[in-house]
Amino acid sequence: MSWYRSMPYFAILRPKQWTKNLLVFAALIFSIKIVTIDMLVRCIAGFSLFCLVSGCVYVLNDYVDRDADGRHPEKRYRPIASGRLEPFRALAFGCLLLFSSLALAFALDSWFSVLLLGYFIINVAYSIKLKHVVIIDIMVIAFGFVLRAIGGGLVIGIAFTPWFLICTMLLALFLAISKRRHELALLSENKGEHRKVLEQYSSELLNQLNSIVTTAAIMSYSLFTFTSGHTIHLMWTIPLVMYGIFRYLYLIHMKGKGGRPEEILLEDSHILTTVMLFAVMIVVILYYFE
Image (tube, rainbow, N blue to C red):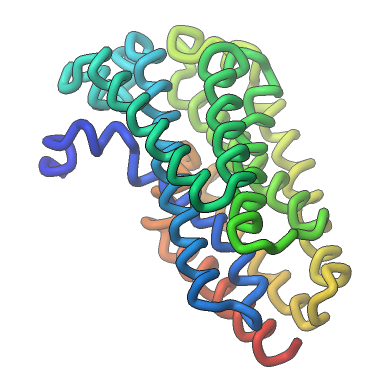
C-alpha cells in the first residue's frame, strides 16, 4: 500500500469507500430490459461524480477531524492526520474538485446537480454538527445512501418505488449502526476523545437498534419483491438478502468487524459472493421472467 500512501491527494478521497456509490447503478439494474448505451454512459458518469463529491466530503471530514484522527489507532495514517498533506492545501483541493464536479453534474442533469449539492450540504452539516447528535448521526449516514439510489434514477430518468427506498434506508442504517458498534468496541477506554457521540451509545442499545433495523429490512425487501410491479420471481432473491445480513451480523459479533463495510465487501468471500450472486439473479430474473 506504499504507492497508495505516496499519493496523498488521491488517498484523501478514500477510493476504497467508492464502492458505496455502486448503489447509483441500482436503477439501471432494475431497468435491465430497457437499458441503452446512453443510459449506461450516463449512469457511469453519475457514479463517477458521486465518487468525486463524496471524496470532497472526506476531504472536509479529514480537515475537521485532523486532531482527533491523529489519536485514533487507524485513522492517524490518513493524509492530513499523518502530516503528509498540509490541511489548507487539502481544503483548497477539495473546493476546486467540488465546483468542477457540480458543473459537470449540471451538464449531465440539472436535478442531479441539485441532488449532489444537497448531498454535500447534508454531509457538511454532519461534519460540523450532526455527527455529534445521537441517533441523528446514523440516520444522516443512511440518508446519504438513499440519495445515491435516487441520483442513479435521476440520471437515466427512472423512478424507484417507495419500498425500494425504504429497503435502502434500512440496510444503510444497519451498516451505520454496525460501524458505531465497532468504534465503540475499538475505543472503549477513550471513546469520547475521538468521537463525542460514542459517549451516548452503549453496546446494548446498538444491538437492539440493529435487531429492529435488520428485521424491518428483511420484511421491507420481501414486500418490495411482491409489490414493486416487477415479476414475482424476485422473491427468490430474499434468501440471499437474509444470508448477507446474517453473515454481516456474524462478522460483527464473532469476528469484531463492521467498522469498514467497504473492506468487508471486498475481503469477505461470503459477502462478496452473495452480493455478486444477488446482482446476477436480479438481472436474469428481470430480463428473462418479466
